[in-house]
Length: 240
Image (cartoon, rainbow, N blue to C red; front, side, top):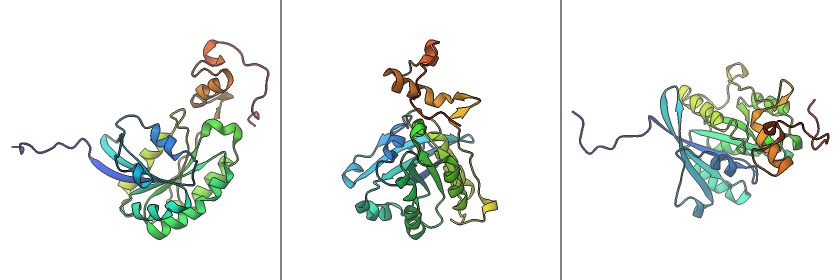
């Protein structure tokens, strides 16, 4: 017989994840794209921390995620060191249109190795919808992730592309390998092939609405939805 008055949990697992990276790489954009079940902490902003919760479904289990976005500014490194205690997963985020943000990942890895050793991590290249302004080649980022034994994703919060998938993969790794060392042999690493913006000669669906907005100023009403052909104007470098 169940105990009356006992609260029923709305999840099977609870995980605490940190989003780290330089400022202005779009970590807040990633959190804002998580609409379903998202909630904000009333005390997070006063500490310079953005916080949300969301629930994902993983292999039939409900996983509640506490997501903490530490600011990328130097003065918040101390905050990162405090909030890294108890972290169960870390997303290292850079902006694919900002080379410096990618080069700064080395510094964040050193911070993680010192203050959160052994915590699973993944590499996330943000703002895939701005691939025409790319400064970080996909292959270079993939090789870097493999060297550091991380799964790699390129995401677009604007198009809601690969955001949930990146959190799901990190959750899966944390639950399957709770005691995995932070450095493994390359053969033991698990890698996710990053999505390609161009598939079979056509722009991927995730970028269509973004290009519609850039070209027409109207969200979701581009030439591909109107049955029209694009103008013969090169507004971005053609894919090779």
